[in-house]
Image (cartoon, rainbow, N blue to C red; front, side):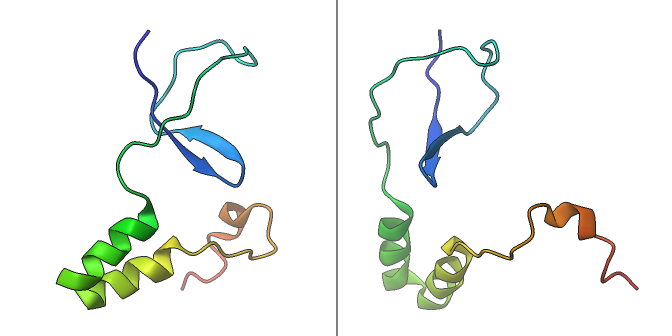
Length: 79
C-alpha cells in the first residue's frame, strides 16, 4: 500500500488524491501532520508579500451560503 495524504476539514479527513479502496471499508491510521498549516504558511508569506498573504487569508475562510448545492445554480448569473 502507498501512503495516502489527506486534508482535515470540518472533522473529516479528505484524501488529496484518489484512493484505491472498496467503498465503506474501515481503515486504521495514525494522523501525522506534514508541512506547515495554512495559517503558518500565510504568516510566513506576510513577511515576503503582505498583499498576497491577505488574499490567501480571505480564500482560506469558510463561508456558508445556505445552499446545499451551489453547482445547480451555476447559470443563474450568466449573461
